[in-house]
Length: 418
Image 1 (cartoon, rainbow, N blue to C red):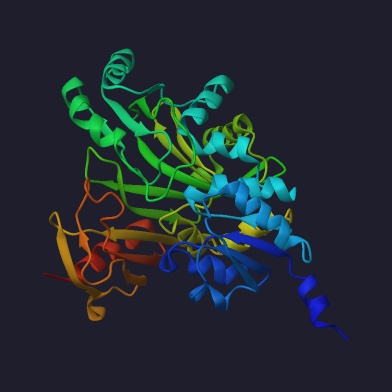
Image 2 (cartoon, rainbow, N blue to C red):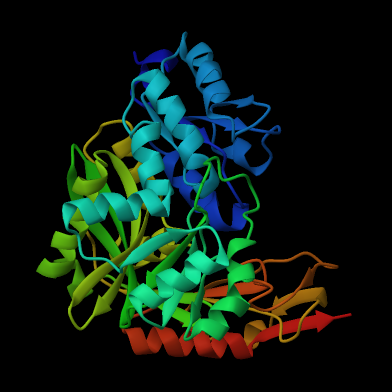
């Protein structure tokens, strides 16, 4: 007779640090809970998460890595953790203190800081000869102007420690650089970055082409590309990601140049185990690494990859964290996409957001509001990422059919404003 304790032992014990927004991340927790026993570290008692977790600990902060590490060691004594998983950008560096303290996979603070800090990423890749835009760290406007002159316009201003294109702006001359410098250097993340920067801003060469992201799983240094997302950008000169399209049979998944660049990037950074989300510009001279994130992709890109390939991101990421062989065998190929919607005007007070169900196309997968009644929002650049009011996802047999479904879904969006 199989006891409850024996059944629990068959399910690896996984520590998850923070969960994020339910509408964005519930699919991951739901999937992981089918095979793993989840213990959650959170700053408040879980709500919707309780349906998927075996236990939880309320900690004072999920940003304080050393304090979380000490608590994780204490909590794990009677029932050791076999893996640590975190998919929140602001918390991947704190989580690395936990993996180090528990002696588990995922990379310690030195490795994750090299991924988290775009300046360290650039330095490591430059030393390894990985193709990327020229980049100079700067502190002052004069230093930025000097760096831009060395590179040649246009250039991109980019904060070293932020994500989701916060503070990123392209400038075509010195006048635009002066205008955009304050926007870039003063950009703030919702949570503390956790890194100190003597030079907080990067001035980078502008490289043109199609921008894509690659979500990959890494085990013992072996990098396996799982999904390629084709970005849809809007609101130039800002780099707002207004959508993504993922094709299960994307030829880039077999492209030697891109796969070599992906492998060399991870080698240069010393990233051996876990999940990464890497962004490349496909230039006429080959792929150029834009940035690497040591976590699952945001904007529901892993969810789109799951729809497009059948490869379950929650199961794969949890397996990698626990040192288990992940199941990366794809199923039937589809095309999945997402489109984010924004208000038309600055400082719009939202009364209600919804969709006319009768006008949604058959290829629609799901639609969801992203703001509560009374929320004041603005389109980019004021509302970079945080200006989103709703999204729609779609699944189809071709990229064009998927894009058309998302365009049609936008016409079904109903917004009431004050």
